[in-house]
Length: 178
Length: 198
Image 1 (tube, helix red, strand yellow):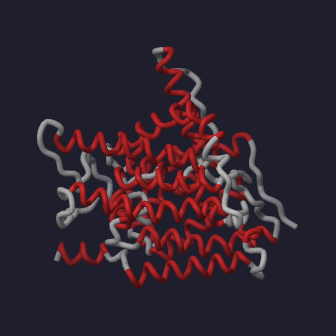
Image 2 (image 1 turned 90 degrees about the vertical axis):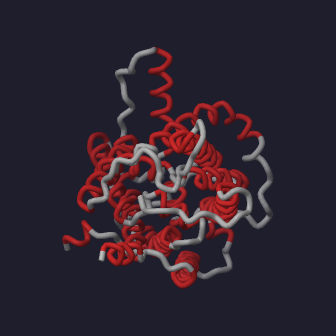
């Protein structure tokens, strides 16, 4: 039993757990499971705070932002129980040299990647979890999103690895684990 | 006939927090919250991410079918547009290839000490105002582009000829799971790690 909380889950168990979690979310809250609204609210909150040049007193705390905070809490619990909590500022697969260095590459890659990820989700109309839950409910748009992500993900990943290895050379082996 | 709980007020807030905690726990235990899992999947080195995705869709479609028939849940999806989903999926994939994280994974990863996820989070928050700015343009273009003739919002409508589309989707997802299981494998990292330690 303890191993269930400490060890990693197989794809089969993980899939069952995800399906049950989505069904429980829809049953308990009776609303789409995505949390794109939470990001919109946090973004508005940050913009307001920047505009007023002080931290706004009214943080938008509703079920969606609570869900987001819960994800952080659950991740901490899982990583502490599994012994995977580790402070890391640069991913192990990121290599950099010159004036920018690995830290600069990390910032550029992550900010640009995060920007594209969220732009894509806004085009599609919901967060990744929302699309995932909608695919279970047989929303055609969610399935189109998933297939588009899978096909283009493999294509862009290939391009990105080719670019990282110097334009068509054999890709470097990604080292270590997170 | 049962009904969804539809919690309100404080109960809804607490449920959001508890369900989020369960989801965060799931993301780490399943390794779906790690950047490496997603990047290795897209590089076709390890099939774990897609295996979890498709096994959850297989289980989820069947569970949802029975839950819906017993009135426990109702269909809860946001409206989607064919080209919005297709273009959105492409942009999402481009972003994933760069940073290896989607929103929930960025939060989970940040909470487990991977501080570089903060940059992903900032990138995501920066995207929202610009998309707000572009939303009128998106609504009048991408969302208005005509979908192919065969397209319908719901699969029940699109595949009306099939007897029970939920089971067909579950069977297709199970096949995809088996495909990634046999073609790519994945999930043996723990065994490899043990070997390395020995």
